[in-house]
Image (cartoon, rainbow, N blue to C red; front, top):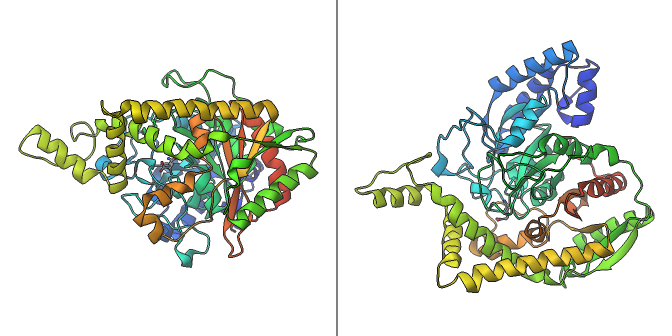
Length: 485
Ligand code: GLN
């Protein structure tokens, strides 16, 4: 076997079982690849000792025939997941040197299934962003056309870049408004945001609790199915976790989509939509039609309110969730002459610009004089957006849209830096899914004329990730997208 880092999880599991290579071989190959790709700035912490120890354990499990579902599979972990005894920062200065005493449920599930931890991956500070540029550790570089210095998307940009560059077999991500799907699209990999409540948020550093959801970013659809099975499940430690059986998502791959009703929302094709993206969307529609699916035109009339609604609700939750970083309990502390001054000094030095912007907006919309005008109204529109989907799902089984309005853009792009709204527009196709609590996947469909990956999004009914997986497998097979090798 030449370069085993290019294998998918499914292929690696076969190689491990057949003793073509050991878990230690596989981990060493990834550690070497990580070293060779440090210029991408995908990892903010490498944990080689831990990884080799876990790989050694995995090899023992293979030797004794007690190998578990992900035995010996080397993963990168977004640095928003608390990992016991391993530094966790949310890529914020305010969490400097924070070492959690506990493990997030999702990472615990993965490691209990035998996965190996290669290290912690870069993200936008507290997952607020669409480019990984707000990270305290600096931006990650998209592995596609490295010389162009493009963003990998965000906030899970370290994860999507690492998966695309084959410096982990797969990675964890989190998605509050698109942070799994948008970076997956920008890096030509596959990621799914599960239904809200499918994966536990316990131990995932909170951004906007009613929207946050962990999920996998992987090399292909099957790997996402394998990982989600392991990550998901009821957790008493998260009061919004849902007690529902977790299906074997991989079992539906290869099933026919004959008769499946695929919804195409008119509102996602605004005038001026990028022609290439629109063209690939049509290609996706055609693939599914050819495979026997029925294409249904649907309407999601409140789509135009999704971004403003998201950018009221998410900051409101930020304002309350981030109040805990006061210099007393976690991370950074900058002393002052009084308690108040210490708070002010710590928070002024610890938070970056985007996080401060969100705390200010959030505090404003929650303040007594503005609560009704902004926050309460946003909550009402959130319900209307959810109702749009419930109505649409009376007519169709799954919805197909583009993932993003553009391909990856350059790091430092002026229009994004000077006007935050332009950055926020990246999420125009993804945020509704979080507001409605539904599952959504992004998978690569092809390359733009200048050779950058573009993605399509599939949205399903609550707890019907299976239909998404089944449909995605058909699109993936026909799209024949070539990953970076
Ligand atoms: N880009 C969006 C934001 O900045 C979504 C981020 C996310 O999903 N974590 O809020």
